[in-house]
Each structure stands twice: as structure tokens, then as C-alpha cells.
Image (cartoon, rainbow, N blue to C red; front, side, top):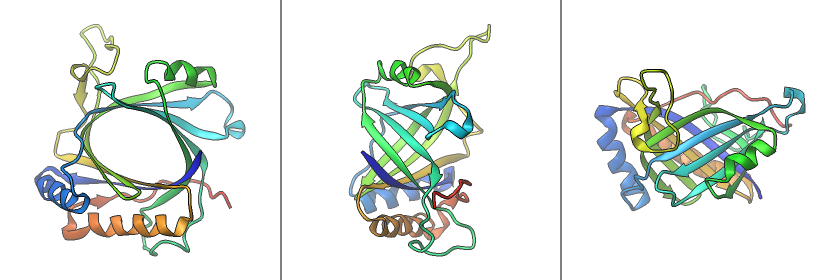
Length: 213
């Protein structure tokens, strides 16, 4: 089923990470799930003007407890009238579809639809849920290569190495819903205020996308 998704991303300095985690635990009422997530992104082999979907993502917990296939529209929802105006917009809204899947069979299904693997990474960190929002704070890792340049297969944690110098963690908030956009926009705006409280998180400008309207 198609639903709206509001998203925002940013970074938190390692020195501020404990304060952010404490804030999120207080806000969400839990300490967050720490299961690593193996993320694979697939793009269509069709010409750009024939694509109905921007990309598909396969998100799978490394303990095999959960896997989800997510498709995203290439078009951006026009929500400027619903969100708090900012000199630099940080919220992106688009239509997505999320479906629980068998993590082992999903890549074959995606390939049959004409998509090919473009990128994969491992997220290690925390995932908090509150209301319609999922808040992730994580370090991003890439596949480790052996001496011959080959990459190991599978989502095993020891097959990955952290990207960057370790001084930052990524922060992502996703707010989903199938109903009216206004309540989702209000919840997303509330998270912008929460994450920028005490200057804990530096939010990134919303990625460019063409409007659906």
C-alpha cells in the first residue's frame, strides 16, 4: 500500500552522541533497538523517462528477524503549506511502499522487475520508534575487501568496515502514514525541533527532487 513519507537526515558529533541517545530514550520511552541493518539499494535498468520508481531498497536485520522491501516514487510531494517555513528546507516528502519480505528471495524478485544492485551498506547503531516516526542513529560501513580486491558475500558483520574517521554518526527520521498529510507534517516538524534542541544534530538540506504537482 502506498503511503506518504516525510524524511530528514543529519549528523551528530561523537561527543554529543550520549546526550542525543538520552534525549531519544526519554522521548520514545525505550533505549532503542541495536540490531545492525544490511541495506541494499537497487536502481531500474529502464531509461530515466520510463521509470515509475526512483529506486528500491532492501533493508534486512543481520539476525534475519526482519526484512523489508521499500520502493520510492521519483516525485516529491508538495507540502510547503503544511510544514514550518525555513530558510533552508530540511524535510523531504514523497510516496513510498513498504512490504515485509523474505530477505533471501527478495534480491531475485527485485532483479526480475528489472532492477540491479547499485549500492549496499551496513548500519550499526540504534533505532527508536515513536508514533508514526522511526529515528535511526548509526555508523555506516562498507564491505571489506581482501588482499586480492574481492568482497565477501552476505550480511555478516565481520565483512564490513566503518566509513569515515568515526567522529560522526548519521541521524535519520522517517515519518510514515496513509492518512492526511497534515498530521504527518506536524510530527515531522516536531522531530526537527527535537533534534536541533541544544544544537545536538546538524540537519542536512533536503535533497533535490522534482515536484509531483
